[in-house]
Image (cartoon, rainbow, N blue to C red; front, side, top):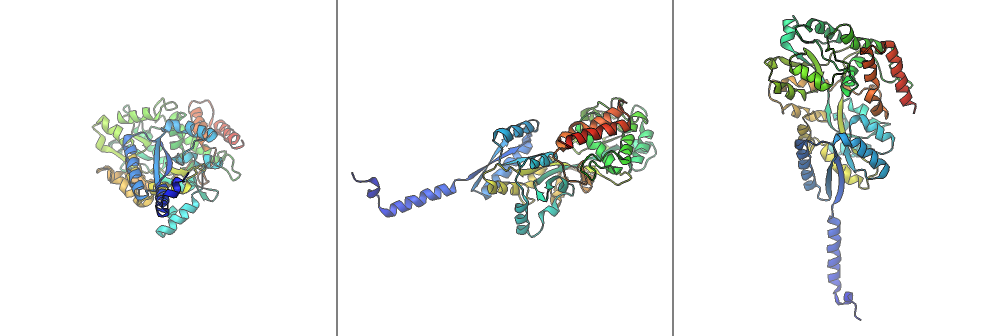
Length: 432
């Protein structure tokens, strides 16, 4: 029998082979990307960025999978043990060290160096200062910043002026002075969180860092067994127990309840992020034009704020790391997808060079007012400043410090007892 192959001219075989090879070469590499926001505006911004990226990189296809924040921890835990991790995902900045310690992340240092060489400057110098403590671990970079967040002091200018204050408080001592004077006529001078919830730590850390307390000591264990931490804890809890300038249910109030009190005109001062503006505006209070923002107050050791945010990370399990990096680079590039994605998230971008664009999303007077948030990012830090993020922080931030605050407010423990219990808890976790 004559072979079919022998009936096909050699030249045609070559053409067919080249055509088949070209088709195979053009088959794009798929990068699986887990994205944790379910808000349609943010999803659309990512879809637009992916479309732009794929048009510029036809050899790569990004498959976005929506994994809600509430599910991401369990999904990642399951994928780590059973397989199925994405190539790229978002992560909360507070858990990057946790997954890095497990060996689950791929370092980005070489990619950052190549990117820096390409643009002619060190790209990491454009990161916010506090992000170094989150993403630079053991001399390697593990996350490429997307968005950041911090807090400011919200205050009622009309109430302050009526009490004889011409400017907002600039120190924690002044906050107490103002709060005592402002607590009257069914208004509390200062609404602070005291429940076992993230806002308690996110507000109280401004105080303990400002008083000079540090999460870790030189041996890498609990650093809170110090006069500085005791002074900070005493100050914070005395606002409730002694000065009575906070609501009576402070030890159990959620952020939502405190925010409602602010919207109802029951708080003169309150610490939170820019996102609360919409809630207060929706209440249509007659005093809305008197609502202002000011920097986080300073303590004896300086001014410190909370730094939240998230990066994109490259998972070590990925078989397409170079293609995955292309997507990370584009999504976190000030000249690429980052401006649109950051604007949709309504939070400042992870790059200082385009931070002003975030302000443009607000009309006056808030555009000018919210510059305080950008200024605050210069001194916003993680809980364990000045040390790099520790793998155990995701466990410790859930209840450790909040429990100490709540126990003192409920008079279950004294400041000294709560400090000892807190360090025992922290050291137990760090010793595992």
